[in-house]
Image (cartoon, rainbow, N blue to C red; front, side, top):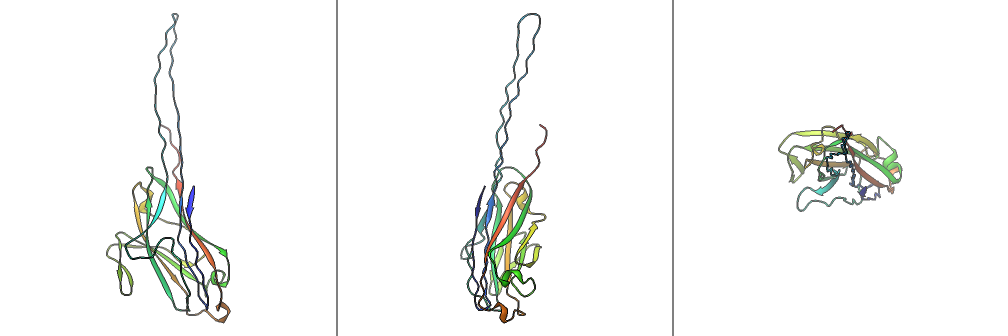
Length: 206
């Protein structure tokens, strides 16, 4: 499996953000034979060919002119908000059982350990592409809230369109530095890794 990660720094009560992707590959193969024998020597055989399926997910920038994925953040002050749209794509050829979204702090500080005054994350999915506006991004279709809470987390991406081969989830990550942050968060920095993990479906009798 492979992964793409990003890092971000925070100073003066500021912090960073990152999005990444994980690709998972699964393969299976089998052959079968059939033989019959009588009083005289005779035989019969049947050949079968079995291919392998590929499970893979990828992250792409949602539109030209938007931040790259992974994206790197700069300094944030209390009340600052950073947003980035991106597409999660099932670029494999078999269905997924689940997609899990998680984040961990590779270098930690109160920016990620203070679950109330530290960085907060919101992930939303749009049934269409996100459109850039002066105030951020809007969705002309249906919006699903996938997660809202502290920036260090682990949650399933429920109802993901990307569970099907060729499916695309139009996601928007919003990172907020609460106005309640005090001086104890000044000059802090955190390095974060965000990961989407694809889980293959269970095998079945053929």
